[in-house]
Length: 324
Image (cartoon, rainbow, N blue to C red):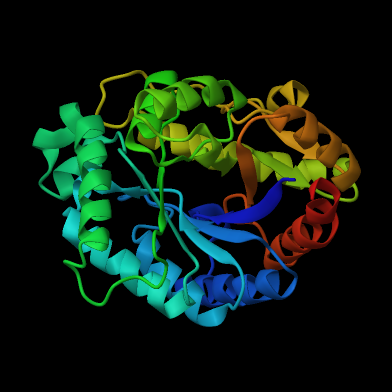
């Protein structure tokens, strides 16, 4: 069984810019509709300083989503832990859990962009961000379990997901006894190894994460539009990833090549398929790993409301039953 969620970054590029207030209002309407359709989970993300307005405060939006939904799990995928004090994260996450009635999934990660660390006066932590994120996870867990923060979360033990993508990070998540926020099956082995080495029951292993793709009843009809927004989304993202590193500007992506590579949790791959074909590929891809949830972007960089609504409806009503 694999659950299906949606992923929100609220990017609003100049090429297709709409009123910011309308974008946020529509996103909350979309979450309500997805919740009505039975979506398993809704995930938010974080970056700072993007000119397309990439979502900057995922737990703030998560609280708004919590107030507008009833059933869906609400996660951060991820919030950047070293930019905030652990007590701040523990308190803010607890409020989301309270507003949602116990539906929080707290995903934390390291980030990687120096301009973001400098914005929060945390530049000194960039080189040690993995250790800082591990420490944040331990401290959030301690604050919750000791009752140091008040009010406490609804859940007795809210999940903490570590957004680590490589084998060393996967093992670190296991050593901490927490969940692993990636849908890459290759990370299952080092994650399970870390759980065992940390004295944790491997049966507690939980993995979840993004699959880059667009699920539609008519892939060929939609591809000219999807490919254009896909190219913009990732070209812009790669441009900001290189900012401040001194690296040469990245080359534009080739959407057709991404599509040809098919399904993978890694960038450079794109699943553009019907619900039936997508379900077959997803089931084979996750196989017998601990991956329990996959999610897709609700929108690709500035898509129209009609197209986004149709995509979310397809994910909830067509794909989800096929993989469940």
